[in-house]
Amino acid sequence: MKTKIIFFLFIAVFTCNQIQAQININDYKYVIVPNKFDFLNEPDQYRLNTLTKVLLEKHGFTTIMEDEKFPDDAVLNNCLSLKANVLNESGVFNSKLKVQLKNCKNEVVFTTAIGSSREKMYQVAYTLALRQAFRSFHTINYQYQENPDILAYSKNGNKVDNIEIEKLKEEIKVLKEEKEAQNNVAKNVAKVDTTLIEDTKVIESITKVEETVAVDVLTAVRIANGYQLKDNALQVVYTIKKTGIPNVYIVEDKEAIIYMLNASWVMEYYENEKLQSKTYTIKF
Image (cartoon, rainbow, N blue to C red):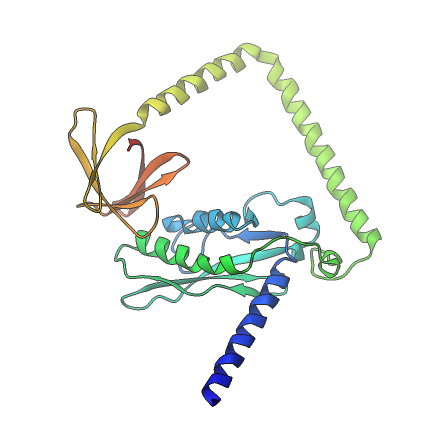
């Protein structure tokens, strides 16, 4: 009986925390995604920062990369935004990641469960672990709702009156007008030599055609647990094997993965310690 009571108390506390997290998280309009997580050696390594942005948007969040131009209201009031972070809690044999969202006061608003993978390649392991961690977002059903208390904060996290807010808006308006004036000057200079502009357009068109032609076309032939990718001469170029993630495959006999991105297939691998990528069109 005592065990049952403890169990139900645990369920009640967990449910309350989830409800509170949902209420709090809906108060925030944006999520800022850093260019580099602390446990990585370089920006967007293994494309984890890009994947974090994509998965947040999949769950309804409006995301901003930290080096992008911020919306006006996010500039005026940084308390409208949450800061996303991915924490590495990996062990010797497991890659373990969890996602955490903090507000402008450095308070944790939401933390996912830990996602894990036993894959040996970091690219695959981290991708699988991050996607698994994001399953926790299915429980919160995020939808932004204005919170008057948060709207009353300035970009420094201090409450301000409407006069100060209007002053900030006016400053932004002036900056916009100055930028538009600079753009107009640039447009007038560009009109001086229309021939040069037309030549540039022709060069850009040729470049785009060359880039399109450069994309290899492969044909997929189903095999056990994956596909053989053949070229136009029906020679097997790669053999790819399924992973636990849809549209993500491991390239056999090559330390590489291949995944779908914007209707194309991208293969990534390391060569001389540098990340390389190739784009393919695959016919299934």
